[in-house]
Length: 326
Image (tube, rainbow, N blue to C red; front, side, top):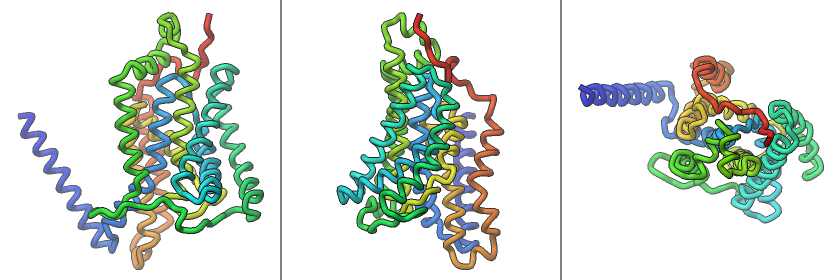
């Protein structure tokens, strides 16, 4: 009976995919182009969300992902131009995100700061700091374009062009899942989020591990931020993140802190954004589909998904609360 139901489920899924494929072609959209755009849009969301899943498993909340994406995008481009390498630019973004994550982690763990307020402060700071960086680094406000050869090259496949960073994001989600569910370090991370007192008695340094997860989450978000200009847009602006940090947080809520589910949520949100991009660049489609309505899809999808799952996901009992050792 179960095999029959599973077969029917797969058959239904295949039918839906074929119907969507035909509908896209009827609208004049190229499914391969849509796949490419969706995977590109998924990548920064997946990186930031997977890192935040690990961070919140340890009991630390970082809602400053938007700020990390913004600042690391600028610093990633600056590093790429300095060393003439897009790959080094990604490393620069990772280092920038790690430093910010380390600062927020130390602030919440040792300074006992309110983690929500600290994250909001980072987002507000980034809104003013990024235009300042653009003017002081390149003497041009709002936008900076860099040579195309500094971008991260893509891999040609039968399914279109795929960025190696996208493949890396998928691999990192799998590794994060294995880390949390198959390793001693993962069990310790879960323990300090649920029962930090018990973990402390057992010899686990709650403070160091929480700072570590905050730094790791910041580094992954930093790679996502640097990917935006170097692997996707080909330039950096003072609004390049466009709310993607908050969409990444929605992926975390949807996933209930499970990295693989966060990857699936990022894929969903990525394809809604990819669809809006495909509509924008495909001749004749704008007239058939209201473009401004389509451009709202990623944000509308975020609101709908969060509204459906909020209150149904279980988070660590001490998430967002600093631990005071007695």
